[in-house]
Amino acid sequence: MVELTPERRIQDMALSIPPAPTPFGSYVETKEIGSLLYLSGMLPVVGHVPLYTGAVGRDLSTAEGYAAARTACLSGLAAARQHLGSLDRVKAIAKLGVYIAAVEDFRDHPKVADGASDLLSSIFGRENAPPRIVLGVLNIPLGMSVEIELVFEIEPYRH
Amino acid sequence: MVELTPERRIQDMALSIPPAPTPFGSYVETKEIGSLLYLSGMLPVVGHVPLYTGAVGRDLSTAEGYAAARTACLSGLAAARQHLGSLDRVKAIAKLGVYIAAVEDFRDHPKVADGASDLLSSIFGRENAPPRIVLGVLNIPLGMSVEIELVFEIEPYRH
Amino acid sequence: MVELTPERRIQDMALSIPPAPTPFGSYVETKEIGSLLYLSGMLPVVGHVPLYTGAVGRDLSTAEGYAAARTACLSGLAAARQHLGSLDRVKAIAKLGVYIAAVEDFRDHPKVADGASDLLSSIFGRENAPPRIVLGVLNIPLGMSVEIELVFEIEPYRH
Image (cartoon, rainbow over the protein chains, first blue to last red):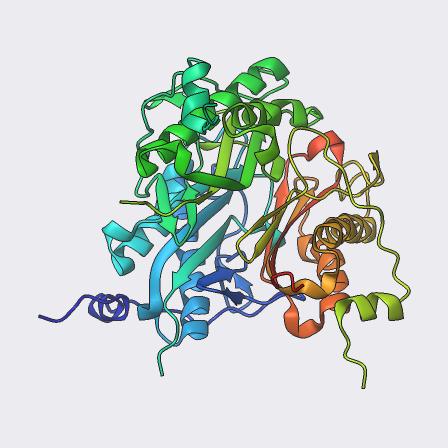
């Protein structure tokens, strides 16, 4: 039986991981600290082109917010994969933060955040679902709709 | 002399720890990564019933915000206790985040955040007070007033 | 050749590190957990006197927001230096969070956040730039304009 590793699941779903993001300022996208991989805030962009901007509940529907969270999370996976060589080196997800630019009376944050959670579950398995911090913020760099924070636990590189 | 462990202090104060929270979406409440225990954002709920909703400074007074922070922090302790078996396995608190849905001109964030800090000090001792990140956010899932982030350092389980 | 350590760079730039901040409530400014040093949210203060208050884009220009981020980051360096004895014990920066109180249509978060990033690069070297989370929040304790979150990886103390 073939083990369902993250990379195998990505292949089976024919999921396309976008190019790894590059910084908008003087920071790095990934930093390995011991067995943890910290990521910069991930945005719903392709390259430096914003795909989802504005407030969820006004400029975007909840379904579009879900898509924005998924897109930003895909950028995070691209960054992690570029750093690690393979997502099969991910042992666990220590933190998923989902920050949503929403209108004041927005309440459906969990439905938006599921755009990231569902993507992670489809790749790393439901049994590896991470803890999650979800907040509605005033705004996000460049007017984007969602920002994703990820901290991975990783396997050391084996030669 | 009996050592004042967290569980002993809880007993002495006759403090009632509520049932551990269960997720509102596809995530887990706790994740053990090496010697750290990461928690999901904790809300002022009992079960899935929100106890404190709306903006501090409009719908809630600062004193009610303090109570909301304490209630959300209690949920975090319940989640940690369920995971660890006993809060005596907590060695330190690495991070306390207090995110407050407030009106725009709200300034008394520290007084609200003390609802979580005071609870933690009463259980883990003032000498174990954690570093703290406090922010006023636009809104919180389901319209709740406060969300708490906790990362614990834990003792390995001894057989 | 003299190695360009952080403390040496601070000396060469004649950079003045302010007094270490002291808490506004029941928390600590720094907490050492294994090889990580977690800091409380750092504010643009000197002592307990706020230097930058109000919303960037209304009460402060983007350039003043940059200065606020730099000032808050200096407080973080002061706190870390007091804890560690010397910033030469910093091995890496695991996380830089920059939280900005801004007007709703503010878009230049990266330019404000660079106030912290540029300071860190000038001391720890561009090659040690951290990953970065940047968010626009509704407000910050005491009405301040920027809050900085820092997690350092540190060298164990050598006798």
